[in-house]
Image (cartoon, rainbow, N blue to C red; front, side):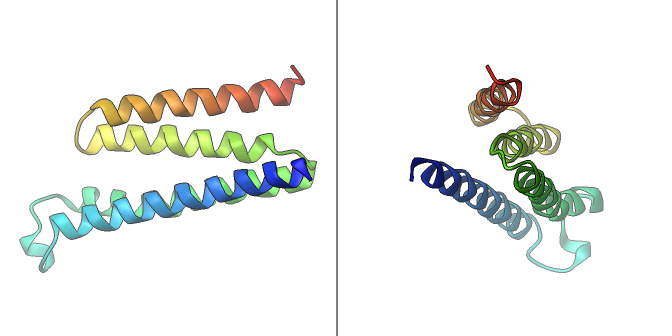
Length: 123
């Protein structure tokens, strides 16, 4: 029973993470572009980066879930969550700048990634 709760928590965490990234990207797009392409103050690369962040995150999370299902282990999904968190923080730095939220995301990514890697090594 405890194993199923752990799996459920990891899957729920991945879904919440993907939902949060999607909402953040949509809010960023809405805040920047309230009209046509000529009215957007940012470049096309900025908009495409915001659009691709949730898609790339979903691909990484699905790959981690598939790897976890194939190996019947949970650590690949947790490692994928850590990668998505770190990548999201670094994209945020590239688009706007660093802050306490970026540091918090990176610390959380390191903790999750370290936990997943310890599990993969059997420590």
